[in-house]
Length: 451
Image (cartoon, rainbow, N blue to C red; front, side, top):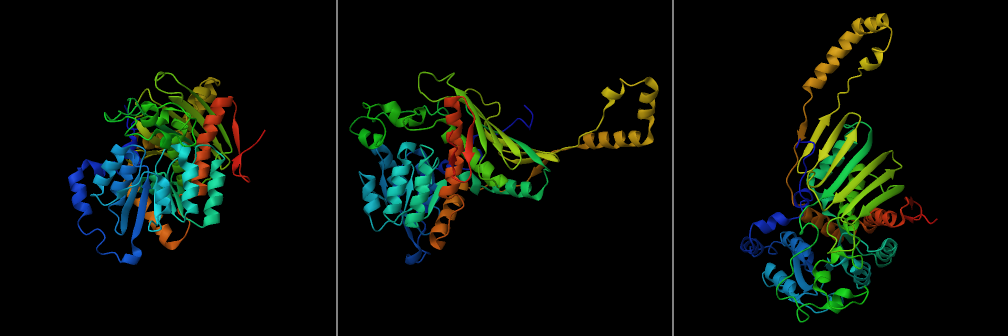
């Protein structure tokens, strides 16, 4: 496999803070108890409540606990085992509540992290802001496409700070990519290839179910909330991304990351047209959402995106981008690599169809001889350029930007509007798959165009 084909895993690409877990829980606790809040004035400390403390939420905790002045004080989850482990991760400091509304009612809490299944996002985000809390909400912002406009209105009405958690845009590698694109180094960009591939049961969201999971340790009614009422079902609880009742599948879980990053790196808002195709080929017994999707996105700024994702192969493993320009291509993955374009204008295959005398004169022209020699020498000397980028914790950086926005009361970089547009692309992919037709974006109304 060539270097142009190689990519990396989601964990590496999006720098989601999982590396902190690799240091071991003991090392993390030692870090957290070494005077984390001691140097911060009481007026600058921030009390945070967590609504949902599953695997991703606990990664966020690991990063948040490294930020001076932040204290996690309350946690809530529909599975008791996750609550116990999240309190352990925080060295026993938070207290557990059995209903998220108790976190919202707590006047001592400044902000909340919402990391729950998608079908709960709109309700909890709006209720949290109406309760006076600033919000960090995991992607995708919404479960249904029009919910984004309701959340945007709530942000404006309550004057709260809401940041969406597609942390990749806070990574050094994506910020450097944006700078390289803006510099003009790639020339005219007309095509981007974006992909998110996996080939394991865990990657396909078939997570292991804890041995102690039962109706006494899992609050099924809390999980269901606004979703259709169904009998107790552990796979639906722990593997909820596999089901349309709670998730939009690959598009809203993985493509939303890619869309957020493309909009950030290219400085655009949304595609004008989306066409998607998807189906369920491999993991048929465990879900009702597609396990393979291809989508084409057309942007009015003059470029297109080919976006793909499958749970059946990782030859282009994990997540990444290839940004194709007239002067070169940029491969964005575990590292940032520039491949210069050195095209050789060599129409010999056409010229050889001319009369012999004309062909001979063409190739013996001194200007053509000199051009071909120089062009071929440049092509032979072409070498990829690895652009050096720092190795950061993007989740920590994303959280720090959220806290800075809270303190300054200014809109965060990944605001509700930004999250709505990126998530809407994912919804448009699913709408196109369902209808078999292209879906178009109304830039003025910030919603899908009606027929």
